[in-house]
Picture 1 (cartoon, rainbow, N blue to C red):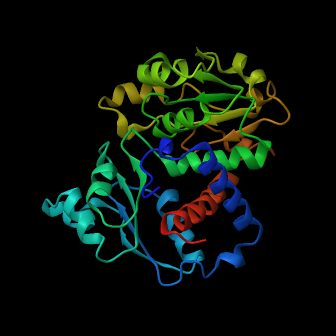
Picture 2: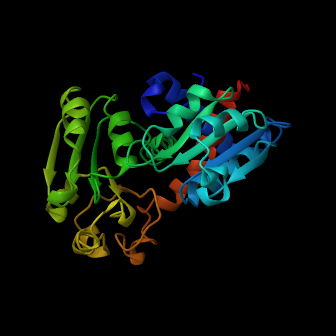
Length: 304
């Protein structure tokens, strides 16, 4: 594997190996503190990010490497009209590996076709977010001890949520997976995900607007925010944004060992009163993002 653009670029065995290395890093980070000494990561973030950008930077620093880059398009030559292709070729002269976030679907793929160093897709529009999916898989493994035989509830914005699309694609390759899709009618999972991923792989799923009735069935609940930046109509955003809010009252119907996840940032779709519940895994999930990105950087740079 030379780049990571889509979670399906990785085989199940490659994912398992990344999880294994990430678990080893989490158990003893000091063993990895010099693995990327002298290497440079370029973070090209054409779209705002906190967790993804900082976790990539933290990952590279903890591997002993260095980081350069920018955190918004306005602070790059894109504001002067430079193409993604030219940016990728130019940055390849200065860095050993690139992590790119871009609002346009397919931009990291274009960058990878022109760069002379590995490119990691750190999120492209509503399309893909493979390192978030690796974070999610590591979290499910650490919380549940398996990646098979799970009923997974996906709740909120399932139409524009790139984390949801990538997670469905990844989990559909494991046996015994079932999805319950909880969303307003306007924010249902896109038809191509239902047809080309779930139906094509024989994955059972159901769609519902009834949050509470779905709750007792779930092993994993993956909450997402309704993303204002993906809406053209603010009135639609305001109408839909508070439809599904996780509260302690709703959790009364859930399993004792439910794993609650969220890619963050949270707005108000999980009440802060849930944070102290031991089933709330979303801040542990954020930490797992650093470990899995450390493992991925090493893999792409050919570091043992």
